[in-house]
Image 1 (tube, rainbow, N blue to C red):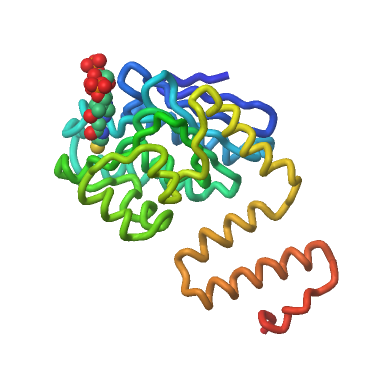
Image 2: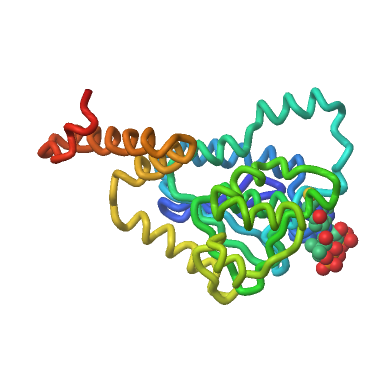
Length: 254
Ligand code: COA
């Protein structure tokens, strides 16, 4: 069902699968892939049948080896590049999706590849996965959210280590840092990622979206604001179900 050149978009029941598909260049993320990814994410957002997503890379060697180095310096002008980024805010679209996103990563997971994985909710890694942010050693900043998402996933200390040194870590170290939730044999990667999404959806719970939204929004708040947000959202759910008002209502009703 995919009309795309640089990605494959498939649906298996309620789960959409997006495969980065430039295996000859280790799925390097280029402008065409950005545009197609944007379209696929819009399709996912607008399709009520899709309730979860698995993101993965084609070929044996990489999830994604980062931004396409051959395109560096080819943008017509900084202003146009900025305007296109604004109009096609792939990273914003990723974070606006309130369904579960699972990244199934193997081989090289570098630069934008790691940043894309970080924009997903859960990362499952094959044993051969290698992670790194080489941008600073190439004289640039990670520009797909890495400076912000990495510390939110495992704290500023390890994030600065990866960001400043550009060193690569293997799947085991990534697991120990909390960067990935599971490490599995390569042959089992896709089945495991699919099982993670299906396991989440199997709960049949209608509160998944609220839970994800509460966590994401709360990350940008003080603890007190976050607790209030959580209580309000929980109360909304109780009200929508016309269930008994929970004992903690006094703490949040104004
Ligand atoms: N952009 C464009 N092409 C890339 C690429 C990237 N980020 N990463 C790999 N490729 C291409 C290589 O040019 C090569 O193409 P070719 O066969 O036409 O020569 C192909 O993918 C295979 O890569 P190769 O370098 O031959 O494999 P390797 O096993 O020797 O090394 C890496 C693998 C990942 C260590 C190496 O490719 C690399 O360092 N890539 C760049 C990583 C990077 O800096 N990414 C962040 C950019 S901000």
